[in-house]
Image (cartoon, rainbow over all chains, first blue to last red; front, side, top):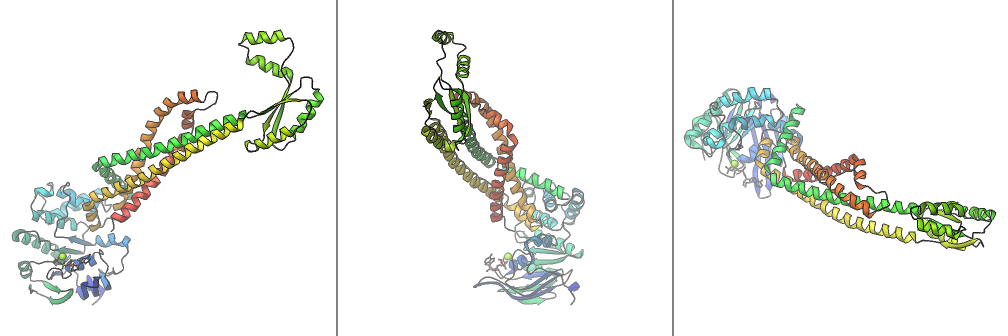
Length: 232
Length: 304
Ligand SMILES: Nc1ncnc2c1ncn2[C@@H]1O[C@H](COP(=O)(O)OP(=O)(O)OP(=O)(O)O)[C@@H](O)[C@H]1O
Ligand SMILES: [Mg+2]
């Protein structure tokens, strides 16, 4: 495989927080551009740790990580913002600012990265439209449903037009209907060419997706199926 | 683009001040107290050295000579005194000159002048007025003058100026010491308060900071608002200090003028004359202190 064909490459990755907490152990993983990969596994098996390694929030204890051809294994503090602008991240707890409208929340991500108003004004309505919030963008987070809040978070993750979208249990706090909508939006974003890594506990979601599923247990990959099912 | 970010940073910084308004007020008050103690210290120093210099200028020693001393003998003595190591200058005050300055001094007092006229002859002695080269060897000068043995010397008047100077120095240095301790205390408090204010500000913006990091805001963009807040605090502090200090000095000046009667001491003029020097330096110092305190707080509480 050439570098061009790999979006995310983990080589022998271990993350050892302390001698008795081996969150990840000798993990090898390749994800191609445009793939939609689900990562499943029981609680405490190292899924979130994997996400943190990919955005440079944690450093691997061993191994090598390459994202989009960029070796980020020993990434420096100053380069982390550059990496984060190439990777959109969505977490389970919707991190929105309650004093700002959904529109302002999405703007905030561009403002703090020094983008000019012209660019902000053209991008923000686009991403809000992708997640279907164009009619509710002037509401405050507490005035919309959990699903809508999570959609705003997804919109915010898209503002830099990332090559990769990491979603760590984006449906964790949502009921099944809202969860399904979120997954549909992720699929739509995937169709535009963005690589999606979805960490989830939701059996129905995984089975319905009919995409690649990687199963992690005890810090190691124990399953990797092209059209997977939730096996645990 | 840089300017845009800079403006946004300023905006965030001001929002941060407004959001923690009470904390901001306390911080500024503490800075003002610190500045006040520093300024009082400065005033003590200025007044002390002004008083010292004024007295120093007046320090001289007189050798009174016999009225019948011949001009030649007096000149010989003057030369001899001039050659002493500790002497800066010697002035000869003749009998007539002493008389002139006496009458000038008492020109408003006809009774004294009347008495003088009744005496008929000039009762004043001619004298040599000697200024020491430097206050430090005033004692040497007295020793040398005491050793002088010339029959035309009538009396020696060695007023104890030295004791007075020592007293002024003593008071000034004691007051400065106390001032320094108080100032150091307030500076320390300022550091702690600014540090804590920035820490709380960061804490109240935890969510924002987390989001900023997640979406790829640069480290300086995340940290700059808190550093700017430190600068804004010192600006406000110094501005408030100026506003408070001038009326205070205007109020104080008449009392000082009365107390230091006869000396040319004007603290208000001193402050006006050195405005930029004093407040510029104070602003720089406070900003530096705040900046360092903020930097430590930011480094500690907003890890990437
Ligand atoms: N900062 C940390 N320091 C020490 N141990 C940690 C740290 N973060 C995570 N761990 C440990 O590493 C292991 C993996 O944690 P991780 O969060 O990756 O699990 P997870 O698969 O995301 O679990 P869940 O499904 O519950 O979110 C756990 O045992 C956890 O306690
Ligand atoms: Mg997790």
